[in-house]
Structures are given as structure tokens and as C-alpha cells.
Image (cartoon, rainbow, N blue to C red; front, side, top):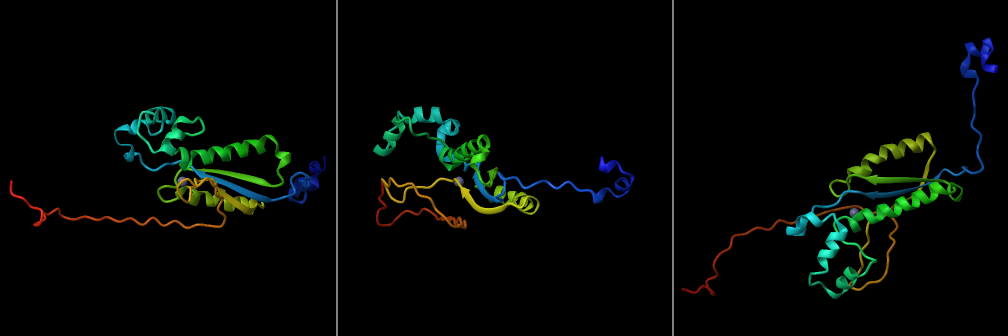
Length: 196
Ligand SMILES: [Zn+2]
């Protein structure tokens, strides 16, 4: 072996092994699939908070409720799930996992790279994706990843009642969450005050 020669034993850095460029892996183009695992709170489930994360139980419970017609149809259909986090956004993360495993099983179909990110925090301060940026940057430098798209599979909502369209948004969005706290003192109104 060349490396066993005394000269190269003394100068080992002069012997390098260069990986060849593979035909299959020429592209560094990289798509980021991202989504978040956290949800907002469940206070709005009231007395039924225990069912918030149990889609089957929650759906069975809803079947006994008086609901708007469109929701009633969905409750009775096998095509819909209900519960906190089902829409926002574990269904999106599930779609991304499906894509990831499809390409992991058939890597020859992909000319480039996929990065899958499941973030622990979006609903608070987006600390999940902000933390992931370090790793994305490192792979850009070390692996030569060229990020061409980031797909956030968070939910999209109908633009108006009975809107059947499914929207795909492109570009970037910022996030601003204004809140208003209004308080006051309840006073008896002179006009409607009546003596008993
Ligand atoms: Zn979300």
C-alpha cells in the first residue's frame, strides 16, 4: 500500500482519497419540507378538554351535537378528522413524512436532496425553525446544499364560506399577532333602571 511507504507515513496529508462524482447524485438542489408539531391551547374545548387530542373520541362526541350543516356532513363522513392539531398541523407533517419515505424508498427518483423538519415550536415564537437554521446553514457550507424551495405544509383555509378551492401560496410571509385587551366597569344604565 502506498500509505505504508515511509515517505507517506511521514507525510500522510499528501495522499488523498477523492470521492468520485456519482451520476445519480450530481444535483445539490435541495427542497426543505417543514412543519410544526406543537398546537395552541385547548381552553376553548371547555369541559371536553380531555378529548381535544383524541380525534376518534372527539368526532364521536360531535355526532351528538347540533352543528352547522356543512360541519354535520363532515362529522358523518370518513374523510374528515377533528381535534386540536389535526389541521394545524399534524396532517401537514404527515404529508411531509409520506413524501420523505416515498423518496427514501426510491432515491433514484429524486435528483437532489430533501430536508424534512418537524419543529417543536411554531405557535409560541417560531423557535423551532429559527433553531433549525443553524443546521441548514451548516449543510449549505459542508454538503453544498443549494436551497431552492421551502414548503411549509401548514393549513390553508377557505377564502369564503363554501369555498371548495385548495390553495397553494408561494413567496414568504411574516407573522404578526396583534391582540387587544378591552376592559371596563359595568354600570347601571339610568334609562333602563327600574325599581323593584
Ligand atoms: Zn400552524
